[in-house]
Amino acid sequence: MSLRTGLTYVDEDGKEDTIFITRGAAPPPLGGLKVASYRSPIGKIAAQPAGEEIPLPVGGREQWVTVKSSTKLDPLREVGVWDSKNNRIDLGSLGKATVVSLRALLEEGLFEAEKDILAEALAKDEPNYIEGIRRAGRQTH
Image 1 (cartoon, one colour):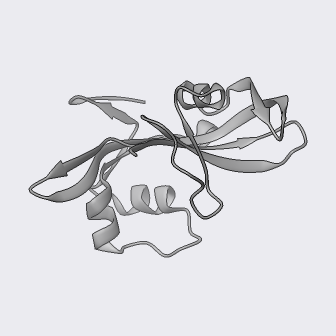
Image 2: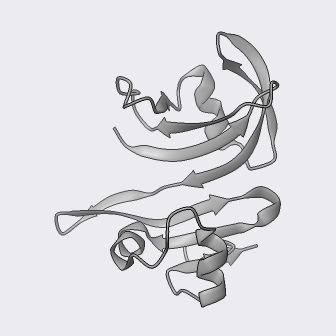
């Protein structure tokens, strides 16, 4: 299983939820986390930017949902160690950012839980965060 995208969305009833989209087949339930393959009907949400409204099967019926945020991961194994490089975060009206290395972020332990990590990193001019989305050496805002 390779998690590629994590999305938070709000359904028609105002209920917020998070789903993780994998490249291959979805695994069995993981401790209450919602996980789906990008090939499944709900998997199409992975291609949607924050703010987009799309119909999705939710709770046994099709509902319109609004994507609140998305995180796209690029996992890779280097020298026997897993990392995820140039991870793209889209928070809609709050902005977009790139996390250069997820492993470095976790090892640094710079951030407290329950805080706005993106705002904190940008305020600190943290080199592991880049405002905007970085794609293959170029950056967009």
